[in-house]
Length: 239
Image (tube, rainbow, N blue to C red; front, side, top):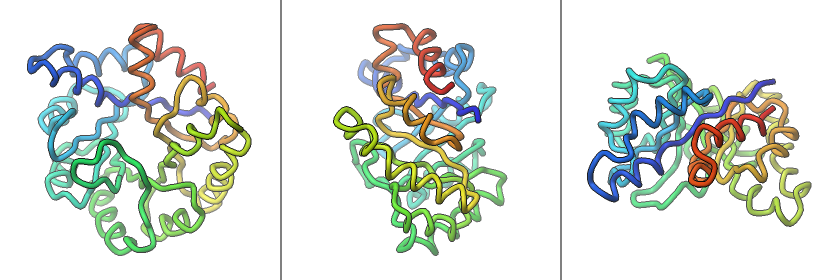
């Protein structure tokens, strides 16, 4: 099965915002990523707009020709309103708190079941595919199924952290989790700290993997290799 690469462009917005102008040009960068082979663009607007701004999301929608994936916490009304206005191909629900540096845990899909079920129904009614950010925990995956989400996104930081020490141990919980998701007919996405070092092994061990969204490592690699070459390097890891 082919796994799609969605490039998270948050870091490009961080670089632009640090100087106050429009360099680098976020919209052009997103279009170029698609031109160079990316099969999707991911953004994660946060309430403080410290990287992706809400206006960026609105501006990107008519320009993109691949799948647009918007990540964020649906408990923020402004986020929900934005998604309903833009209607991306996919919304990824992430339980971030205000001011959080980066995503660092998945949903407790059992405690939040009723809430998630309600918000997912709203997005699906608008024709937006839903993906719910979860840890590689069977209980949370079972809980995700109860919310009627289309997909889960496996939070892969623990895999990336343990991979250099013992890749078999690192991947094991994710293999088990992905097997359960497939049994439940949940689509499988993955993201967080995936890189050129660890991506190919993850892909080989998770045959039903539909999509990875990668930002920090990919943009960092592009400083050395250039963005066109870097996207091709990542696509090669997904074969």
